[in-house]
Image (tube, rainbow, N blue to C red; front, side, top):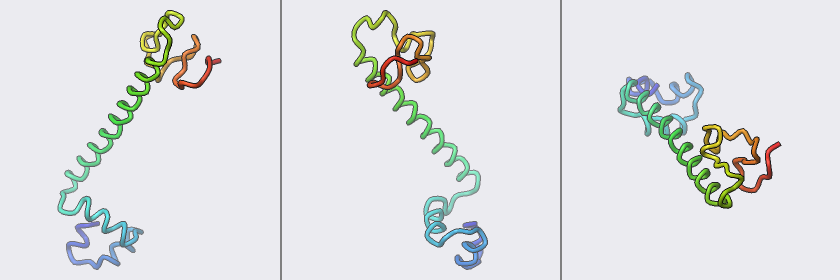
Length: 106
């Protein structure tokens, strides 16, 4: 699409052909202009991976905050060791839940 515009097709025609507004086109051109298709694809993969890593970090930080809030010796079970799952995957059978304010699961 950006290549079409660079090849001489008017921006208005490119936008109409692809169903984009001019603002969206220029936003995409700013982000992907001058890149080859393979580079743009790789950028997208890296952005997706970065998003996944950010979610994992947020989950880990939440798990740590939950573990700090648990009283010592909380029924002898830890969220991280219970049935080999993390706090984000705890089944709730022992009353441990992901939310700090939630009561026992059930």
